[in-house]
Image (tube, rainbow, N blue to C red; front, side):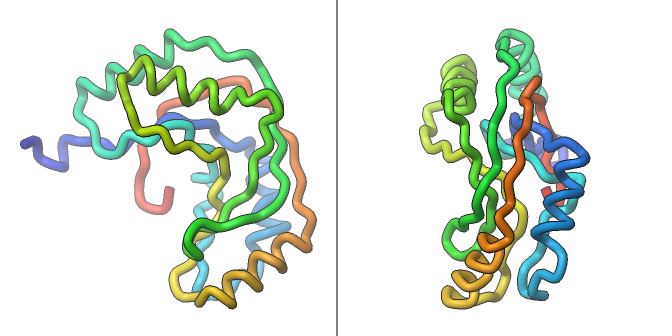
Length: 165
């Protein structure tokens, strides 16, 4: 078994444009309850395929696969707020032509990955201590801010996950 220090925690995703990162922080993440930890601004992204800890060989395979995949430029909409298990707070992504799902499927096929759960979203915060009722109230408050943005997707990239990603 390889030492963890030689492994990297990698994923393929879409970076969030700088102006949109600013808008997310300004409109949604100011004045969050202290029990909720916002994702660091520089780490806001959409994950298409998460690998976890991988060795150099798997990293090279991922880089080569990215070179093989051509994606058209397309728009996605970010609208609405939701959560997973009262812990992860995220912005809903609307991809009317299902490009994200298609890219996810192509990546999994080329990399021979069988895991099939994919739900396009942009994580903005992690709830550490709010109970279910408090989380539901927070989601309602965030929804009332009527957040909306459009993003032109031009590329997908390989990210290394570090603390706070």
